[in-house]
Length: 327
Ligand SMILES: NC(=O)c1ccc[n+]([C@@H]2O[C@H](COP(=O)([O-])OP(=O)(O)OC[C@H]3O[C@@H](n4cnc5c(N)ncnc54)[C@H](O)[C@@H]3O)[C@@H](O)[C@H]2O)c1
Image (cartoon, rainbow, N blue to C red; front, side, top):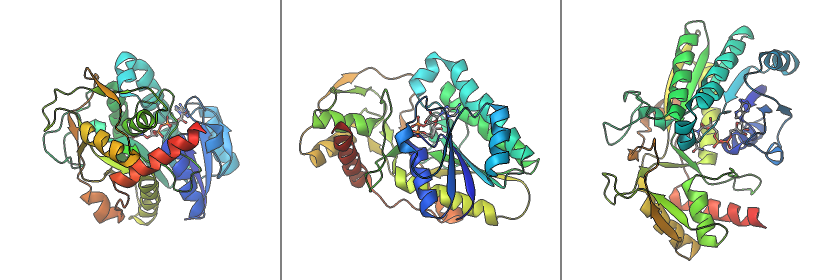
């Protein structure tokens, strides 16, 4: 991989791992981030351009100055629960501003556009494993904002844009080199919360609902290591570069293909940490699906991508990173 890549949200959790992986493969990541949620310390592999993806003048100026040939677009707000309370804010930041970025990509003749979508676009699962052909039926404004961008990218394909929507399941873990990891504020993701609770670095964890129609009543999720995710972006960029000429748009699930319940994750975290995860039972969170587990065959077949870091590695890396952050 070579050349300059515009990475929006590159100061965030997944974006910083994408930037590191890009740099390791020979590309120069240009990070565009407001730093509203991201961190300057996480931008280590290329310049930081502090600004908003919805700022059309800034986008044109960045394209003229850096001449990126491809875009990895990760910038966005990520909280499902918050999006239920503030739907317009989510639709504006995640969808309307992305439409401005897509227009800029078309204006500047970008050759490939990789978008961070989510498994949440499937809504309530109709099958045990979610394939890309499952109906798109978002049940939260967050998921709706992502579905709207996917539709915009499919439309932009008719004008020649080449794009891939990567529907992540639950990103976990941290860089094996210890340089970067998850640092959300407030943190709402299960593994860092469980790790902090087990290590005595945070409060007891609240398990959000135990009355779902799942084997143990807690939600079932599919967890994928952030470094595996980052590597999938390289695969997607390479695939877009060699796909037949003309506009195109495809969606790919990125998960592990296996489901673990929240209760199973707590038990496994306690086992690996050597201490149980202190927790209490709380109510369901609005916008959550009972079960989201991906069929990842398409990413394997088309992109040649397979995750290699299992749940134990994800938990070990999370525990190591949370200890390191607390020092
Ligand atoms: N973390 C997950 O498990 C997960 C799962 C599915 C999808 N995703 C998607 O992946 C992407 C990255 O997630 P993350 O966990 O790294 O989140 P993050 O909050 O750590 O990173 C997002 C970054 O985007 C920046 N940002 C937000 N709005 C912006 C704007 N308008 N202009 C410029 N920068 C802006 C933030 O400052 C932040 O640095 C998001 O789009 C998210 O929806 C994440």
